[in-house]
Length: 282
Length: 282
Image (cartoon, rainbow over all chains, first blue to last red; front, top):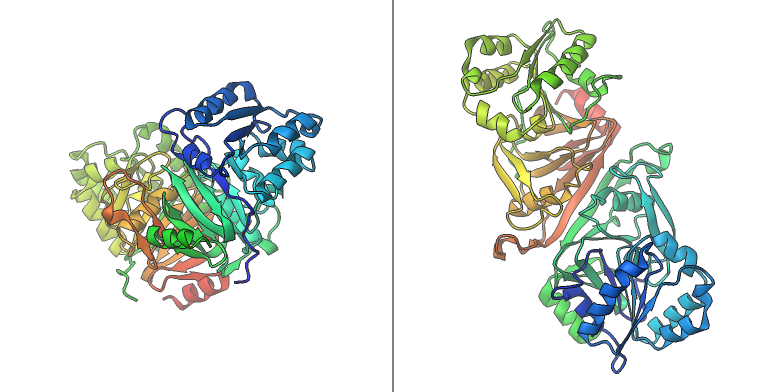
């Protein structure tokens, strides 16, 4: 396959927002279960949020219920705080690093190039699990969407993108995908460059990104995939900014919990296929 | 091709809602231009609407600006009115028959099996143009959607369907498609029966359904097509009602004005291809 490798060192979990935090914690339980053996410390980073004091206690309670030994609540409001030794130290000792929702541009603007982000990348390389919901999911790839036209973003320039946190390559992630009608955002991105898989996460749904670009859907909602690799034609390069984009041939999948996808092979995996691949430890 | 024939006798125009009625009337102008030669009478049917007196004057003014010789404003509020000889007579003499928006279930409940509907079918067979916006578009096929779950309708039973007005076969039409985030409605229908093409009309966008199932996109917005013919797998038949549906492989297109699609051949038509086919008079 000629795709850019879809890979992350440790397991990544991207969640579409509004995951259950108070009832059976289905998604957070899966996140926590991916923590490396013997390390049950959790760092929750609320940099994306404008109301960290309102959302952090829910995550603290949820991860404590799941058995966390410590839950470090990290507001990280500015670049100075993103360089603090004490915060870096807490990241270094955590087995689970969780990004809350909010605005993904706050995440990259505050964390980009910071000691805290470098520490998170090292933890991921060492096998810690990095998870994020909503903005925290959208920011994971090398390139992210941070804004888009409200209803029909399939107009040249209708989606604003920039560098993301760089935890995974080969795909683009959008959250609240069905609840906010974001189909056209991933279609627009696919038209600009068909090489990258569009991953549209519904609410209370997520994907575990296993090694070698194997996606596993989790949660009660849908994970929509938009594969533009076989794009046959589009007028996008010929348009003026704002004009509507035509698209011939993208492929659409809808994954539910326990279904999967091999990003490099562009292959849908029904549960027994996904199970066999994960059992092989590929 | 093994698809059910997509055909209508006269030209049909399905519009996604919120078409321009006051400025340059791009879509309504195309509708009016399809009137059979020498017949510039227009019948506007507001049966779907709960506020016919508020919307009929806009259509009256628009069609008069376009050159209509008469604009007949037909509220048709109940089945008794749908049987009135005078109303049937006005339909019989109109070259353009236009359905407003509202609730498509009102359209079928009031017009189903009525003398007015029979008269409209005869006019269509005689070459009159039949157009409809929003509910008036959704009701056109043999089977229509009349309700769906608000955010994620891709759950078994998440879409409610019934018989439509039967003006066209082989496809299903949804309106306000991008503005109301209705992607999952057409995916759900495609999973239940992959034979039927999903046509998702954005606002101020529409399709002319030419003879032999050739679609032509018109207006400023997008017409999204969801082709489920190559559906590879879905769990829908194994689920309980309400459970999330998995889908492997649907094909997605986005048409803009002057692009087209051959429903029976399942072939996207870029403007010069569409132009050549329409010039042939196929």
